[in-house]
Amino acid sequence: MAQAGIPELEVPLHAVNRDGSNIGVVLGLLFADGETTPTALLAMSDRVAPPALAGLAARGLRVPQDVSVIGFDGVLEAARSPLPLTTMEQPFREIAERAVTAILEGALPNGRELLPLKLVVRGSTEPAPV
Image 1 (cartoon, rainbow, N blue to C red):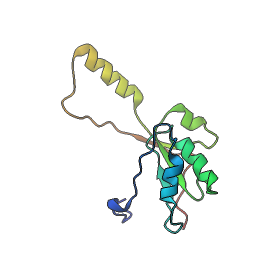
Image 2: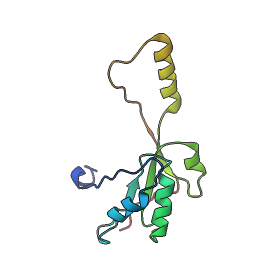
Image 3: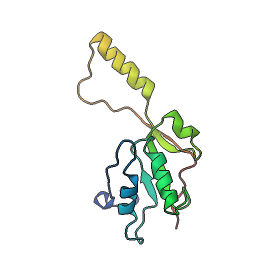
Image 4: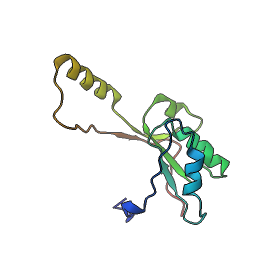
C-alpha cells in the first residue's frame, strides 16, 4: 500500500464471522456511499471469500472486473470453486512438520517464527479498473 501511496489508516477493516454470515452487513458498510467503492477485498480466509463473492454478485458487481477478491490460506476448495480464488497460500506442510518436531522433541521455538507465504493468482483478481 505504501508503494501505491495509500495511507494504511485509510484502508477500511471490518470483522467478518468465520462462516461469512455477516458479509452482507460488511459489504453494506464498504459500499455505502457509492462513490469511493473498493476495487479489491482481502478475505482473511478462503472460506469467507465465497460468501463475499456471492454478496458482491447480489450487489451487481462483477469479480474480478469491478472488484478483485483474494483469500488467505490456500485450501483446495479455493482452486476448485466456480471462480478460482486468488489466495495467499500458507505452507501447511512445513507448519505441521515444525509443530510435530516441537512436540516430539520438545524443541519449542523462541518467540515468533514467520514462514514465507506464496501468492497464487487465479481468476478472482485483475488490475483495478481505471
